[in-house]
Image 1: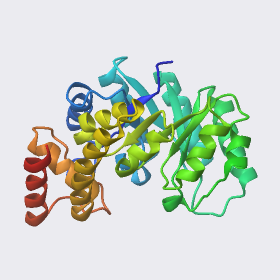
Image 2 (image 1 turned 120 degrees about the vertical axis):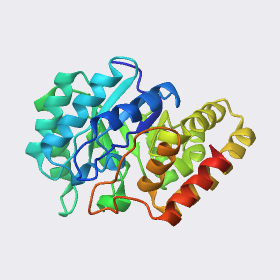
Image 3 (image 1 turned 180 degrees about the horizontal axis):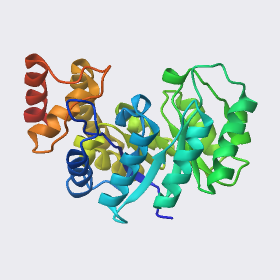
Image 4 (image 1 turned 135 degrees about the horizontal axis):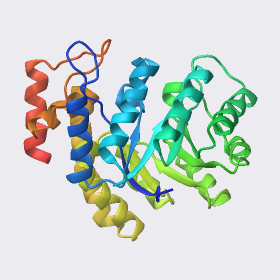
Length: 292
């Protein structure tokens, strides 16, 4: 297994106008991340990949293309989580066979699952695949809030490496790092990476790293070195960029910026708005020219 610390892009997926996967464009996004953003790895099949609007076959196609393009150049994490446990297991087995370094799975959502059900979900995926697992905690989208005792229960499974922590509860992050120093934490909010790193986060997984990966690494490395004033200045610039992206449409704007950089980032998957308006295109161009 490769080193899973550091900067991981949450991989964007290029779609054709009819909603099908644009393999050429996806390969270009992957190469851009590896060759230009210099990321340590890719987190494939997450929210940024518009994953929860895709069929099982499409998710497998994306896992296959990503592994084929990246080869063994970087670490690869496959997000296989689903409210359908059978699908999660099927995807986990497939990604494991492809050679992904670890699986990740979002906490099961929509229904109000008990913690015992959530633990069974993770233990089942691990038992069926034999692969490592990174818990994907994103409470503002799933409604699933877990405390330190519950993470401790999940961590009793030796295959659970840690958590993709997409939350603003830095008290919980600090408590987790103190209580479980051998379990990894990946910061999931790009705009709050510096405070996460200052509290001991081992890496970060972010959607804006597809275009802002170089700055992300600077923040990460400066933060780890204790050079907080320098890191804070870069976080300020990063957050100015993120603020502009969020106001204009997150995935759509990142894709338009990639297109301006010569990458065939394609369309978004409906029911998301699949293509930018003239005004959104103008904003994307202005953001690229000012910040990238």
